[in-house]
Length: 526
Image 1 (cartoon, rainbow, N blue to C red):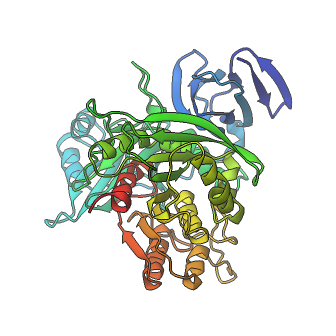
Image 2: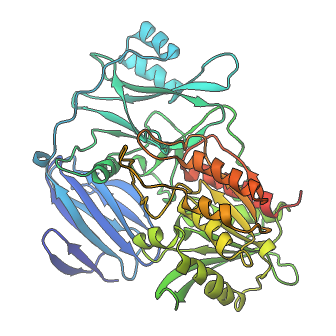
């Protein structure tokens, strides 16, 4: 295999026998790299002394990775799975001198009664205190009152003399980078908040996030990805699609999971020895209408019934093959008789940038799906043309696209499964939009406005937003509010809407089971 190493800062391109990127660095350097792959793979990062630091999933197309050098020397990024045309590139390297000092951390006493008791007994920050915390596991979860409808959740980090700040990175729109306080004179860093009963979410902790001089808001926000890691005091981990490596603790590449009392069971996610597995094919589809090519993953059931089969079309192929065990979910649901045998087509994105162009209510993309892709599939697999047995599904922009396809082509897509759909979207509100105050004239919820004037159809909608996806301060309506609004508009127009709110955020950890629940609701037997 051969790959091109492109070091953008030096404007040179060198052919390499191994697919790797070497980055000489000084301690404290902030480094951003990119990886381009024809198919999903795994990126590995090694320290100057050869230690494996991180393994992370790398989707098809272009993605990036970030890290902060902890010591001087040459760091090495490699592709764990050989790819025929992979490319690694250095995008940015910012030395410590071009970073600004962190704002001093807030100091506050521990808000948790249980932690207050431990601090009173052992002394905050003593070895005995931390041993007791480790035995309990974090976050510390305590009921707010006897009703147990809400819980106080306290995240902890054990700092050292060099720790300047700690942040919580999680899928909650109101504040996805919460800053920890420190107990004065100790190594105890903490963040506490109230969450509803049944909450499940993935999170990471990030000490000492680089503060980039002169950086715009989005690059600074993304700098947290250089430091995020799993909570070392929480044994509950989620790989986020990265295959495990025996004997390696992938703390820098994994997430921690919080599941409060009342979190729903997840019966469909694990493989079962007695369940037959469907057939999986990876194929390339070239669109004449769009002039691009993408990968499709096609699932056919182990036991096929006679005649044409129902069809599931699911966006964001990479994520739904790695972060979500979609194929296992389908095997389990079909074997249990909860949904009929079906063909599922997972639709990939040609490039990283194409997703934000094609999925948000793009008429050319919708027409391609209805008039080009579906006929192409029908020539190769026994799939129905009945809209009542055709489900189009996705999360975030994929949920928005699913509802859009059903509006534009209801004769082809009669069932919509939207998980945390981005119905806040409008052409004047690009990703990262921030309300500007009195001069802000950009109005969101474009698709909801289209449904107001559209004729009623027989399309059935399944909408599932998270309770923690509310709007952020100084921002427009969030995913929770805009999903509720769309639900009300659709029902007022006479559509059948199946609606469910889960206790979580914008998070594949929740979308795994919500995908199964949506398929049962739309395709299962009553």
